Amino acid sequence: MCDGSRCDVTRNAVLEAVLLTLRYAPCMDDLRYITEPKVLKHLLEQTRELNFSMASEPLVGSLLRSLAASKPGGRLLELGTGTGISAAWILDGMSDDATLVSVDNDAAVQDVARRALGNDRRLTVVTQDGTAFLKKQTAASFDFVFADAMPGKYEGTELALSLVKPGGIFVIDDMLPQPNWPEGHAAKVPVLIDLVAKDKRFETTPISWASGVVVAVRKLE
Image 1 (cartoon, one colour):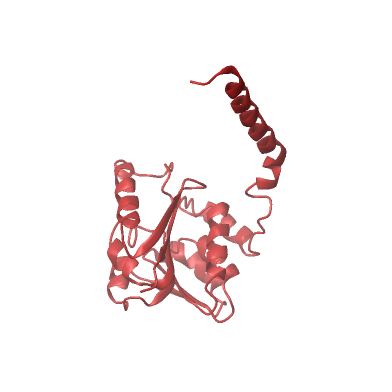
Image 2 (cartoon, rainbow, N blue to C red):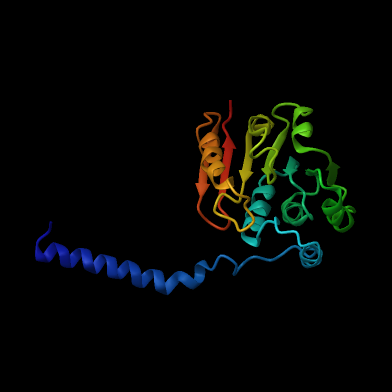
């Protein structure tokens, strides 16, 4: 409880905060300053033609680009090529001497990415089951891992996490409800977030934004 004067102070502070939010909100338009990769329009057209509904949204793409830019000369991994939309964002942020390996088991969908992005010498596209790929990799061999498929996300999560170098970044998206989730999938999401967040090797931040993102940075040993 508070007396009249204290309540007035509280109300005034809240009102001032609301007015400031309304005044500066346009400056925080999430899409306002995002410049899309040149190839993105073509990839989106191809994605729509295939009725492929699992592509990352622009906000997530922009975040991936920024994170990729933090790893100059790095070795990056994407699990779930899809039609190459996320790969386009990641490549757009990468330095000239960085490399990206993108893995998917759907050759037909992945072919869109091959045709649109295949001339980029920094990119290696692998058509293989993601879990099988993970099992063949060396621990702590990637500076950045984006898990956007069942493998590395809901299957073989520990394998994917183990590939991240100290100081490296692990990212998952689609942690908020999505229209293409199959029945029963929603129950798996909090389990996954809990698994990553409780891993003592990582500093983890779940972000309830865009499609729902978790960013985990592996601590230096």
